Image 1 (cartoon, rainbow, N blue to C red):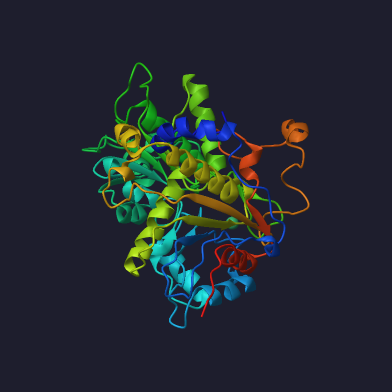
Image 2: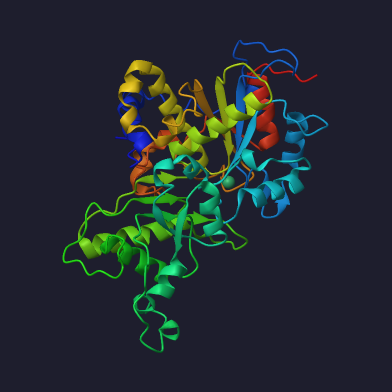
Length: 437
Ligand SMILES: [Mg+2]
C-alpha cells in the first residue's frame, strides 16, 4: 500500500486510490524546462474568459526566503494580477506555517508581493480545521505557540483550554523543570472542564511540559483529577497540524519541526501503554484534507469574481518534494480515484467522508487533476534528493515523512521541474494556451 493516513477523508478514498496506484497513475514524467510544456488543446482567449485552472502556491522557498521576496515571485505576480491587484487566474497560498494568524501571513505576503492578499486566500496548516464542525462545540486542549488560543477560536472552537491552563490548574503534573515546581501544595482545582479532544497546532516551546500534560490528558480520558485503573483506548481524538519533521531557518542545518514533536509523542505513548497513538486527522501538506480545502478556497474565489467555468485543473507549485510534491501527487491520485467512483457510490460512503463533504458549502464535484511543479529556489537540490533508481536506492533512502504516510518514490516525482515560480507560471500559461491581453 502506497499511502496510509488515518483521516476520515482518506479511508473512503483509499479504496479508490489503490487501483490507480497499481497502474502507476501518479505523476507524469518530469519536464526539465518550461520550454517543454505542451498546450493541452483547450483554447482560452483573453483574460475576460473564465479560467478553468488555478494555482496553489507554497510560500517559503517559492515566493519568500525568510523575510525577503524571491525576485521571480514579483515577475510571476505581474503576470497573474492586473493593475488593481485582481487575479487573472485564481490562486491560493498554501503553507505549513501555523504559529501565526492568517491575517498576519496575508499582510506579510501583501508587503512582499506589492498587492493586497486577502486572508481568505491564505491556507495555513490548521486552516482546514474550520470545517471540522463536529469538534467545534467540544472542549479542546490546544498545543503550540504564538496565538494558538486565538487561532482556535477564529477557526470556530468555542471551548478552548491551553497547556498553560492545565499547568496552572494542576501544577503538580509539570515536574521536569525544578524551578517551576510549586513551592506549596496547591488546592484542588474547582470546575476544571473535561477535555474531549486534543489539537496539536505546531511545535510548542516547552516540549517536556507539553508531552507530559498531553499524555496525562490521554491517560485520564480528559479528567485530570481522576486516577484510572486501565488505559482508556481508543484514546481521546487527536487532530494534528503540520507533520514536517524538519525545517530550514537561517542556520545551515535543519531545525526540529512539529513532525519531530509528534514522533516524541507517538513513541512515549506507545512505550507507556503498548498501544498505537492514533490521529483523528493529520492536516497540512501533504495531507489530502489540505488540498481538498485549498480546492474549496479556489472555487470560492472563482465564484466571488463571477468566473463560471468549472475548475478543471490545479497546479501546485512548491520547493519541498516531501510536502509539496508528495501532497499534490497524492491529491491527484485522490482526484483520479474519485473520478472513477459514481456520485451514487460517493453518497453511500458519506458517513466515512470528512466533515467538509457534509458542509453544503463545499462542492462534491472536484477538479480533474492536480499537477505538481517543483522549483529550485528553496529546499530542493537538483543535484541530490530523490534517487534516480528507486529499486536500487530505496532502502538507503531516509524517509522524513510522517509515520502514517508511507514512502512511495513516485509520489515525490514532480510533474514538472522548473527553475523558479516565474518559470512555473509561464509553463502553466503555455500548457493552458492562456494569453494575457
Ligand atoms: Mg516551501
